[in-house]
Every structure is written in C-alpha cells, then in structure tokens.
Image (tube, rainbow, N blue to C red; front, side):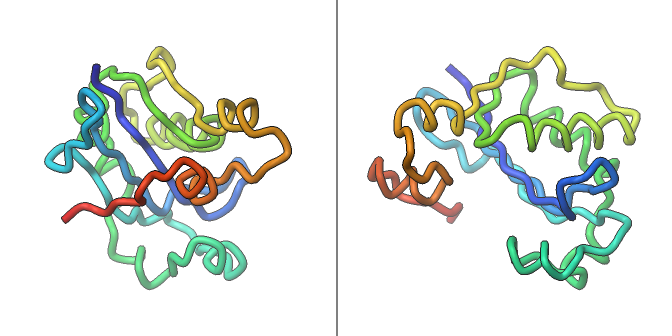
Length: 147
C-alpha cells in the first residue's frame, strides 16, 4: 500500500497565515521511498513573525528567494496522486494545504483519505506527550533524513 507522509511549517496559525515549508515522502509497503519525496521552503509573501521563527527555526532570509506555493503545487499533487495522507495533527496541515491549493488555482485534496497520527497517539497514550519527537522516541522509530 502507498501512503504519503506530510509535514508543514507556517507563518502562524491564523487564516491569513501561509506555508513556509512543505515536506512529503512516499511510504510504499512500509518502506520510505526517498526517491519520491518533496522538501522545499516556500515564500509566504509575508513576514514570518520572530516568535514563530523561533519555534520552527525558519527565517525570513531562508524563504525570501524560495518559490511561491503556486510554483510547487503541481509537484505536490503529482507526488500524493490520491494516496492516503499520513499527517501529525492533520486538521492544521490540511487547512493550510487546502487554502494554498485554492489560492494557486490547483486541484484540491478534499477527497484524499487522511490518517491523523496525533488523533491515534492521543488515544493510545492518554496524558502523555504526543508530538512527533516524543512518539518517535517512545516507539523506537529513528528520525531519518534523506541521504
């Protein structure tokens, strides 16, 4: 089975905020396919507030010359290709992706199945930290980077 794991970073949490980073990787039959991944900074066409930059570590200097979302929308859609999406805190990431795709005039992803890791983690580990780092550590999953 093919899944697409996705993570995003943004300029904040409001309706006026924009994506500044998008990463997605294909998981095929439980194996990460690094040849089928997308990682890019995105020019949000607005400033990243200092407090938000301190949270995710992405600065205005890193995104000023990055492509706008509309320039990478087709690449993103080609990678996901209708496969189920695996996202930690899916409502957050999906709200940005849906908004950015609409602004880009691209096909939207309303009908794509989504697995929300955070929802599963909250049920599996009530009262415990459920961020991705804590879950990786708890489950013995190596936080891998592409080589």
